[in-house]
Image (cartoon, rainbow, N blue to C red):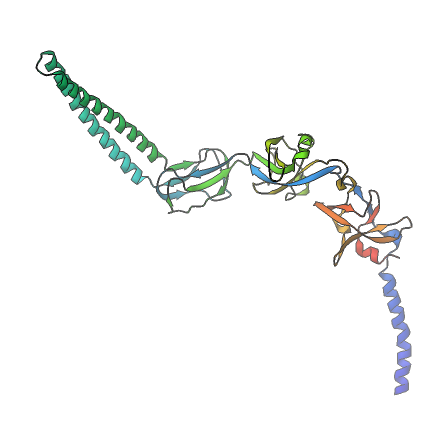
Amino acid sequence: MRGVRKKTMLKIHPLMKALAVTLALAGTVSAADLQTAPAQAAALQGRTGFDGVVEAVRQTVVAAQMPGAVVELNVKAGDTVKAGQLLLRIDARAADQSAAAVDAQVQAARASLDVATREYERQKQLFQKKYISQSALDQAESGYKAARAQVAAQAAQAGAARTGAALNIVRAPYAGVVAEVPVQLGDMAMPGRTLLSLYDPSSLRVTAAVPQSLAPRVQADAVRVELPGLPAAQQWPQAARVQVLPTIDATTHTVQVRAELPASVQGVVPGMFARLWLPAAGGSEQAKSVTVPVSAIVRRAEMTGLYVQDAHGKALLRQVRLGRVDGDRVEVLTGVAPGEAVVLDPQSATRAR
């Protein structure tokens, strides 16, 4: 039995060896068959990027101007509204009652004015007939003028009360998007309390802090806007207008640069991260940077690199330092020169012979 087992093992061993060689050869790739692409010079070479944020040029916070419970709420955050659209309504019964009370006071003041007017006319006739003194006439005239002033005051209060009662209906001041609705149906609205906020999505801008030394380089045709959160085809809108605010921050020595976005831009909301690219001051890393496909990047522990094919066709692993990601491409700040052949599939590079 021992002899049989030994003989069997001697027959199987060569087969396993041949199979291992076959599998090893099947996993190899010829260096000439590696798919490569040249590293491209970065589109933003010679520029420096500054982080910014998207802001709404026209944004409105609507606050309550009268007390009362919210009895109608027709919108929620994210809704698109038209100019003049009814947004919410506040219970105006208390305001209506106050207006009615003031109207009653106006009627009472007018009645008093009628009495004072007749008394003044009567006193003037008596004075002409020498039946009363000048003092008595002056007193009647004073009462008449006081009654007339009281009517004017009450009428003004009545107008204010009627205006206040009409403030229970809140309408959209312009077409826009509702950004926030911090109240709910049934909440008590008090004068000054925020009811909702909205903004105009067709009027947005990107604001970034830029060193004051670069302020003279800010020109409308020289500033590029980047919106990394959008699809690659929409990440680079053309700025409609660029403005540099005329003040400098005394702490950071920076100026605020505003780049207005075109009205046609889609998918952009206030608060979104953005970046402004300005011409760099002198030589910079951006001037030497290149871009490569994201699929070519290799990450091993703390090392980031990619395979570059040398003049003899051999794939060499090279450590690099990455910059920003633009769609399916990534910026390489150091480690690769423009035009070098970058292996697109790192796994195939490890099997190349």
